Length: 440
Image (cartoon, rainbow, N blue to C red):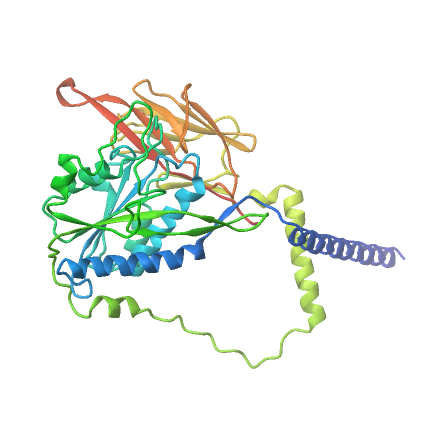
């Protein structure tokens, strides 16, 4: 009798658990349907909307090079993509659109032997990173190198930015950085090709002697009335409907384009040599019965929902700081899980280090969990935490809300260190910080 009672209890428990999974699964489906029926979320860039602008830019660059006596089909090139960043804080989606366009441009046009270089400018060029670290040579593994190039683009305005941009000054300074490179194409990306000044500032203008000297060696590829080569529209998707954003490119090409010959095959053939992924043949076995498949789906949804309700949904959420990735579920509360420091610093507490070239050999900042947020605390008196994602700080401390819709929050540091002989050397560094939300 006791065994029969035990078996009955086990069956009842199994039935209750199965019913619970069914209920949780149905609730998940209902929630998904409700969410799909109502507009939610924040405005976001429609990345596919940038593609048509990329095509226009590629064609314009190719034609400009031909006009200067070159041929990108048979020659390598250095593509310098310079980003106007003065509006990045107030227009983050415009900033994202510029980066997306640059990434697609490189993917569309660059081949082995090319060089991709990034610069940032406002009222002039500003050093968002060391120039040597802002360039990628496209090698034999072109796909991997293009991914590296996509990490070059600036993500914030200059520290202490007051906005505005001077297109002619930026072009003049760029040409000075590439004076003897007749195989270089300068592409200035901005929200407006017409220069925008600030209170008390003076724009260079097209009649300035320095800019006129630039035009002795470079062709500015004209296209629109305000001096842009091309207008490059994009689309922002929002709950209330799509909105068109505006971006412009100003292209400069040497008056006589000369560069190393591209080894066969020609550029277009290289770009078309994309190996299609093999398609797995369909099996001959019959599919699972629809009812069983439905049970599996509902059970899986129920399992995921229960994990979320128990707090397990974020167990795989990670935070990438510089070149290292940290699991947030393993990070202790209230204690540092990561230290940013300069080469030569040795930790005595076992906390993982992210070493940044150019920083002094000391502890510069600590990252710790504070509830569902991450706190970044500057610990150096010589190199301070100046801003986060363009948000200027005053107390060397920042608290970051980690949100999947805003995953990148770069940390900007600035200060002064003593170089050889005790001579002060200014330091401005950006340490990337990117959040990835887990799904199980």
